[in-house]
Amino acid sequence: MISLKTKFTTQAKIEYPIICGAMYPCSNPELVAAVSEAGGLGIVQPLSLVYVHGYEFKKGLERIKQLTSKPFGMNVIVEKNAKIYEDRMKKWVDEALLAGCRFFITALGNPKWVVDKVKAVGGFVYHDVTEKKWAQKVVDFGIDGLICVNQRAGGHAGSKSSEDLFRELSSFGLPLICAGGIGDENDFLHALQLGYAGVQMGTRFIATAECNSHVDYKNAIVAAEEKDIVKTERITGVPLAVIRTPYVDKVGLKVGPVSRMLFKNRHTKHWIRFFYNLRAVAAMKKTALKGVSTKDYYQAGKSVHGIEKVEPVKVIIDRFVRSLTS
Image (tube, rainbow, N blue to C red; front, side, top):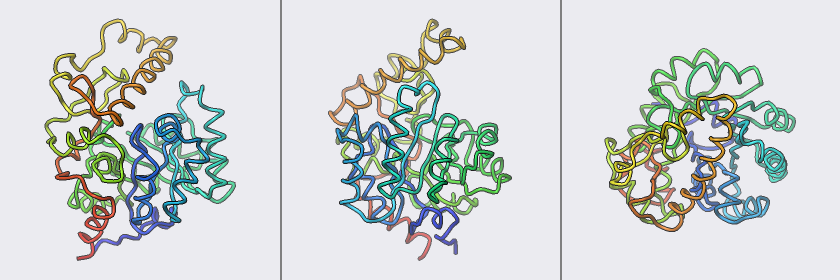
């Protein structure tokens, strides 16, 4: 029988090797807290907490702590073209540490400053990677584990299978988390059988009672099949996994020739990415909280194949755990 106790659960001080991935705009405090309370690890997405759900960051953390006394984590974007947020990110990390958060997931850049802050108080930092060359760049900074984003993930998915990523990244000797394609207990079991120290789920946790995304979004996830997930460049400029709709078919999946040229130029690529990201922020906020029309995009991964209904978080986590212990 596969053990629910892994190096990851020991570091994060949680019962079960399940992470609710940080999602813009879907990571509302009630969802984060529900996953932690059920024995997994809810992850705070600070831009979502502040700019979508309307909390002062410190107040948002207080709301989570009112709902659960169990550990939670925080997502920190360290990408260069997000430098406009760097000072406030550092402030938010400090506030999270003061609130007792000791587990952080970094993404998209150099995580050294996060590692330095978190290690100083005995915390742990994992980093998002899609292939070995990116992992190689961050392990020397003292990263404690890797979030292995595979080709079945929602949002900005990787290009490799969970099996290939595990083989490539095992040599680092760090705990590896399977991110992408985990929709039901069979997917969970398969990831742990491969040797992963845990799983990260996003799409599965959108279709829950505690997520405050619009019912249209949740129903679209429940209705979708794996074949309905496509990758579009039209939202952020780089491939993003979404549910195929008539509107997605109408506008196509690729950016235009001018945008493509700007993305390839080293002098303009950061500015065009920033423009696309600002536009995406407004669109995703509308999709999550106000319902959608065929002109909107639903981010989701291929885990939709295992999602049959909207359920409470605890029901999902308990079912996953029973699949390993029964």
